[in-house]
Image (cartoon, rainbow, N blue to C red; front, side):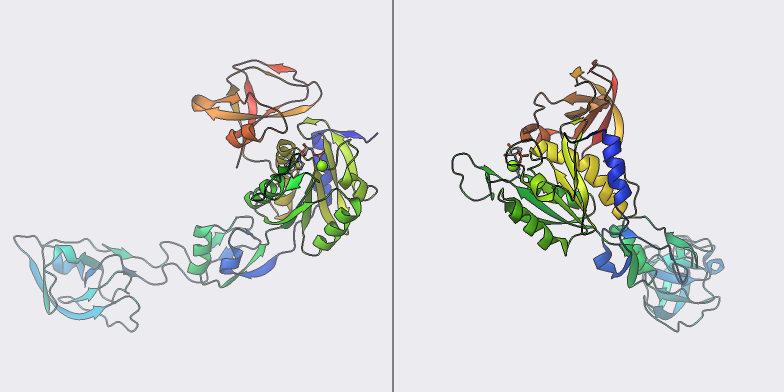
Length: 399
Ligand code: AMP
Ligand code: MG
C-alpha cells in the first residue's frame, strides 16, 4: 500500500525539494515575464533635465503676466529648440524661443506658453494669455529622483517594468529565469489532435493543457508528444528530456491499473502516494538526477487540479516567489455541495454576480466540459461532508 498524505503534507514535501533557480543576466526583451532578482535604481533623475510639456514658446513668465486676448503681448522669437537639441542658448527677459515637447527649457525661461494660446509666429509671436511661472515645464526628477529604487526584487517584468528598466538606461538585468518545464503525457489510447481517431482512442488534451498552465504560472513549457505505455520508453524519454528541464511533468500511469507505466518506470526513484484530495488522489513526486518530476494523474480534471495545487506553487518557488495557489478568495455557495469525508475537495464552479459561486453539475474527473466552462475552483475542507447554500467557501479564481 502506498502511503496516504494530506494535501498540505504532499505540498510541503514538494516545496522542501525545489530550489529557486540561479539568477542570470538577460537582455531586456529576453527578460520579459521573468522575476527581477536585483533592486534597480535610477542613475540619473527622470526626466534628466527640465523640458517642455507642450509645443509652444519658452518665456519669462513675468513678461506675459498681463497678456489677454484684448491686450496681447508680442515678443521676438530668438531661437527654436527641438527635442534632442543640445547646447541650447539662454534667453533674457523680453524675448522667447519656440520650443517643442521634450526639448530642454533654455536657461532664463521659467514657463512655456502652448502654441494654441499664440498666433504661432516665427519671427515674433503674439501671446494671448498669461502663464504662471513653471507652467508646462516638466521638472528634472519629478518622475524619479536620482538614486531612487524604481523596481524591487521579486517583481514580474511586464511591459511597464521593461519600459522602466529602459528608461533608467538598463540594457541587461538580473532575473530569475522562467522555469523550463517538459510536459509528457502517457497512454496507448492517446492521439495527436488533428489526427483521426480509431475506436478506443482519444485526443491527448493533458499535454496541451498542462503546457499552457506552465506558461500561466510563469514557466516555459516544452510539450512532448504522448508516450506509449511502455516503462522503458517512458524512462528513456524522461532521461533524454532532463537535460533541458528545470522540472518535468507527466500525466497518466500512476493509479492502480495494470498499465501504470509511470509508476513502474520510476518506482524507487520517486515517491508515489495517495493524497487525501478529490480529484487527484494518485500523485508522485521526486528528483530524477536532481530535477523535480511531478507525475500527475491522467484524468484531465485531476491533472489540472493537481497542477494548480502542487506544481504551480513549486514553479513559483523556483522563480523566488511566494508558493501561492491561484488567486484565492471567498464566495457564497449558490447551491449546496456534498463532499467526501477526509478528502479536500476541489469543485469546478462559476462565479456569478454578487460574490456567489455556482458549482458545476458535472464534477467527474474526466469532464473537461465543466472545467473549460469554470472560472473558479471551490475548495471544501477535509472535515466538511456538506456545505449549505449561502455558506461562505474558499475559492481559487482560475488564471
Ligand atoms: P491513467 O491514469 O493513465 O489510467 O488515465 C486515466 C484516464 O485519463 C483514462 O481515461 C485516460 O484515457 C485519461 N487520460 C490519460 N492521459 C490523458 C491525456 N493526455 N489526455 C486526455 N485524457 C487522458
Ligand atoms: Mg494511462
